[in-house]
Image 1 (cartoon, rainbow, N blue to C red):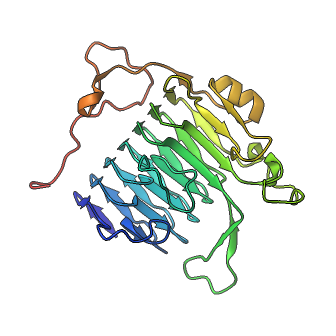
Image 2: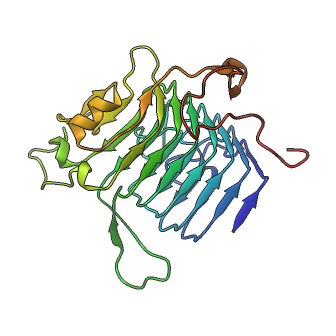
Length: 284
């Protein structure tokens, strides 16, 4: 299935629960579903929501902006490739799918083997979130029980991730590795150490708002969670390699929605895209 040069605007005017099926759209049990050069804007809920057993998805060269919740929400699914998208001002409406946590420009929720590269994520509640719980999912064509799935094998590289309201990167692992949940009498059994999950952060550029950290490591209600400013500090504490840097991007006119790198400004990261108007079909 391919959606090309489509506009997905202002859905869920009746206000159905955004924690269930409302928003721009929801895709379930798909294989090789592609969004190409679409505009996904002003939806009451998530912009693009994949939930349950999706495989080998691509979201490319899209403009995803001003949705009440996550711009892309990839949930209990496999193999998202999200690249060359401009993802701006999502999840800032004060509510979010699934209980008000871990929503941003892109949220990978208990999913595996996703590649997120060459995107500009600006002014979202969080830039990218890795949301981890104890989840299972069916598989396409499967006849047996659902299988365990969790965040592992992700690559987050060459993204420009800036001005998030909370965190540019949120590793919201709500697991016992980060200590006892406040509602638990005792901590549960030991869970996966995130450094064993083959997560890679390569060549990104981050710029936080004043007073905000770049990273949240662990669900903040767990006692062993921590926040970090510098990629090097995050890498040292977590054991997850990170070659990202901090840098102040120079946009043409961010206030007016022009997210191109300013003429004459030095490129701030190899592979970071200078966004102009994303091509659209006539009339959109």
